[in-house]
Length: 176
Image (cartoon, rainbow, N blue to C red; front, side, top):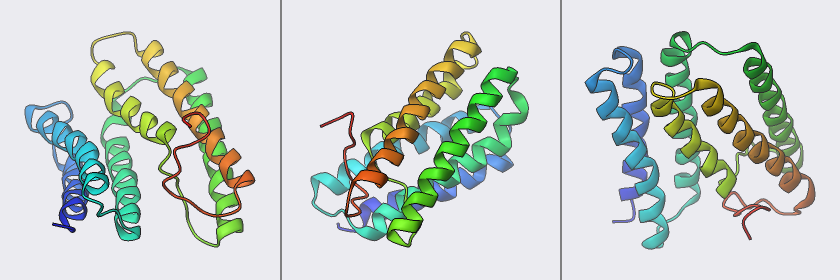
């Protein structure tokens, strides 16, 4: 029972890798995308509610998030037209994220991405954005995702800069 959340997370990693072999927005792509979204919610929910959270689970969760974002980026970015101001904003977000990672590495001597509610909201926003980009104004969707992601990125820097001890599962400064 204690390994079920980690098994779900590992399945999401493998499902994410399949995106590079599937036509974007096809039925198969959509089914796998929804399964990844369900597993994203399910693994953490099960781990917290069965008291089976673990350090390895936290690391696997971060790895699965990175894998899914990377695979979807490779597959979907060529299909989306980004305005230059959104591209500039994304570059700024990447710089902020890298600064946060450097601060955490310097302070804790390890690669750290926190599981704050803001980062979870960023994941949800990115997940929904892919769906909404096909049916509504892409500039509005992209801007909302960038706002949420910017706030989450800044929050992570503030947490790394002000907290003495590492707590990967901190709720954040916006959600007390």
